[in-house]
Length: 582
Image (tube, rainbow, N blue to C red; front, side, top):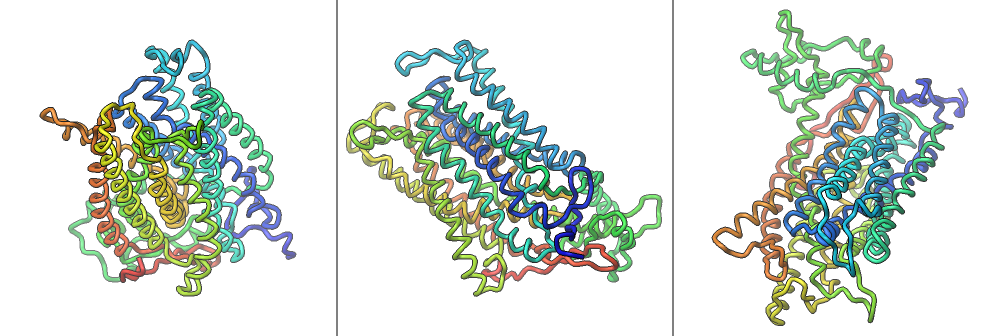
């Protein structure tokens, strides 16, 4: 058969369910239609998130704690709703159609939000920058718009990146190598959108109007969706398997608990498993036994009763999800650190000297540009220089293992927050020196003092954020890769909720007995340095837990191969537990 007529080997199909030709579909040709959407969607999200805390305090008159909490709660909702979107995609509608329906909800939310800050009856009236108190109707409409966006993001976020990864065939060595770079360049397009948001949209919002600041990404999102659908003939799709994945995951621990008093056989062949021909005929993936979480093996013991035991494959899928969960738990604190970028870092910046030249004033939220710039500069260096260099040293196609990548990112984040605490100590010293007491007094200290903490978080994200996205997609069971990606998004979401909880509790505890809160409305009379120091201690403790979880983790094999006439075997290899091989 000629190369031009070779079908993909991973079972991908077109929208009508027909096999697709490898030469005419997928790869970077298909992904080029997706990258534009990701850039515009991130521009929309960061255009809202980066400056939302300022809108809530200046236009809706919320206090510092309430505004930080509401920003974190909304961001958390945006990142946690993908759990539902991924489940619907993997079990019922598929990635393409779930994304299609959800993107329309997302655009509707953007239109409503633009109306909320544009239509006179829906926004508070302002005179010379001072706004009247918003009515209950205006506040309600604003938050309905925000959470409509969160619902839409639930279906778009987990499916668009995995849909892009689906365009590369794991059974084709050339495409598999291209896929290694996919997540780096996917996040690069995401960073471009974030860059324009923090550099351009934030300035437009504060100087030309919030309506224009939200209207531009709304139009951009509509255009990118049109481009996305133009690429439809080139896309590859994974067939939806109607298994009840949630039921299977719950069934395994329940059955293992029922069989807890039974002895697990030494001979693995005595555990219940279906014939390999079943997997071949149904197109499902057979997963062979691994030595981790042995207590779950009892779910596959043959009891010869009415209740059928779970198959070894179902047990191994449950083990994999449990392993991913352990890693996921130790990503929550790093996500909490990142939540500072759009909340306390911004409020911190509003107190500093933001003048550039004689007349231009930098919007405090625009300093987030340096997070994105450091990412944009670091991704090509990482992909084009660091990975090839380390590949020669280690023999790993990725240069270093994914967990090593995460560990480096977490360490850089800890350093960033430690730097933030040190800068805050410097700010408080200047405040005492100039006897500043009013919350509206500008601290005679350049806003560029905050630059190191922003830049370090950006560099850390090249290791951390991209590594997490790749890790959860790569290590998820084959039939659950959209759901696997939600480990990444939900970790960020819960990190935001956790930051909201910590800010609220720290405020309550430190303000007891008439004392001054660490995070008060007047940041010139607060102790943010104490809060940042608290986060550093929490992060160091979490780093110890990460090293423990990483040492216990068993990677899914990178190799997929055919056996017994084509059934796919997923092997597992034990993790080297030495410190350099996490």
